Amino acid sequence: MQALLDAIATMRMPLDAQRIFHGRGGLYPGCEQWTLDAYPPVWVVTSFQPVSDEELAILHEALSARWQALSPDTPLNWVFQYRHEVQADTRLMAGSVPDPHVVTANGGNFRVHLLRGQNHGLFLDMAEGRRWVREHVAARPGLKVLNLFAYTCAFSVVALQAGARHVINMDMSGGALGIGKQNHHLNGVSAGASFLPHDIFSSWGKINRSGPYDLIIADPPTYQKGSFIAEKDYARLMRRLPDLLMPGGHAMLCLNSPKLGPDFLQDLMQTEAPALSFVERLPNPPVFADLQPERALKVLIYKAPD
Image 1 (cartoon, helix red, strand yellow):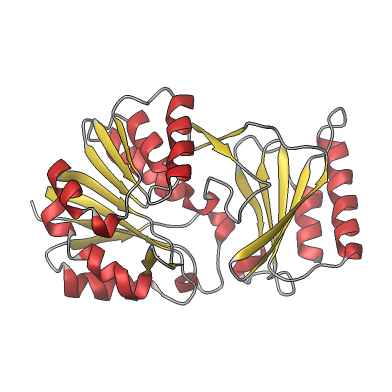
Image 2: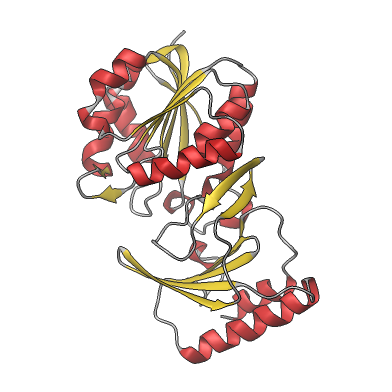
């Protein structure tokens, strides 16, 4: 884990929530299992393989030494998560975690929860996607946005901050949308947001009645039984886009699967919604660099005909 230890030894005091070390990208041989994230004032070390007590002790020593240099008058707070298959074991290793825990990112405030569940409430690899939404909406004030698989509604927050007229957030998880409502309240953008705890594929009538939309964002899980399976369900979503988008409207399609590359989305779009033109694939944050870019997060922008 030497590359991880080197990253800890040289890391700076973070202000925003961010990834510090991304071994998963394959650029650090021998460290593929490791990631290090900052959710100030807490560090989160994640391993995708089992870890020994000795390794955890080495990490604790490294984090303690660096924290002593960065902020000697405050306690070190860090969490360890071991991810295996679809489960996660999480442990508080030192200090404490704020409750509620609010972090900043992309100019917004967001609630996170580090000690429960596999996901923490804010996807750090989607920073460029949130930046694009903010800039796109700011250049076109008054847009109507549909945020599908909204999770905790970070896209909605930045869109409303940038001047969107209305954002409809839809997700099967009422709990995630509840955190999303709190995120809107934290940022003073509750007006203009709607929250629909529904199965998207059973709610096209409601979605259609509220449309058409200037921007549609779809950030589904790759595989979530009973909700979305990319290989089967992305086509069903895509074929709805032409009727849901305003002339000249845009769609942001996201896919976080190491097994499915950008060609998967592009080929499906050519089949299911050929009238929409491909605009660009957004870059991922530099810290998420991957030896095989097709395995990394895919965020593709499409545009409807004028």
